[in-house]
Length: 192
Image (cartoon, rainbow, N blue to C red; front, side):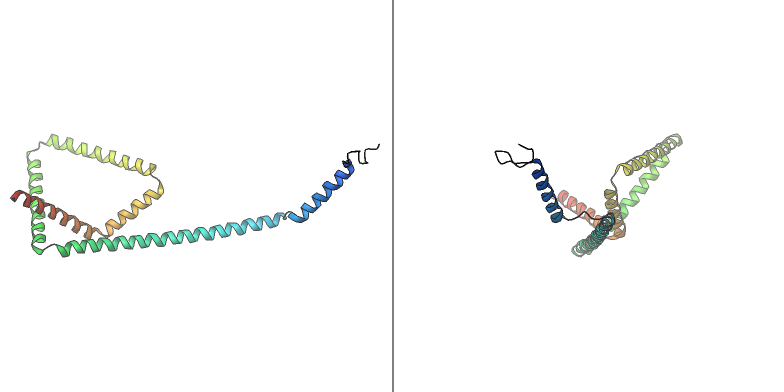
């Protein structure tokens, strides 16, 4: 018996197995196709990168549009709320609020002057030193917090602060009206 003839059980010879593997390999190569040349892979990668950049730019643009719309909507709602409070507050209440605020300012100035007049110079110097230390420690804490806070959160806080600064008058008016409302409510509770 030779090695290349089928044995009694009908198993193929090593040569027949090699031919069968080569035929299978050739069939798979035709099915899958030849590998792309190096230049094609680089071009495909550049195309994919360009598509990803375009998608990222579109997402950024949509996010910016949504942020602007949200900011506009917040500003509009704040103005509406301030106007609603102003519209619902009688003129007499607004006048009393203004009078109360003026009285509070006057009393605060008088108290501050009395404290300054009665405080010895040494105590004022120590107070000034303590205030300087507090300012320094506050600055350090702010820098530490800024270093540890994620950028997206800092950006949101900055946008909120900018919106608050841009709408300072309606916010202050709303706060003053709230204080007036609370003072009126408190005085009504005492009168009962």
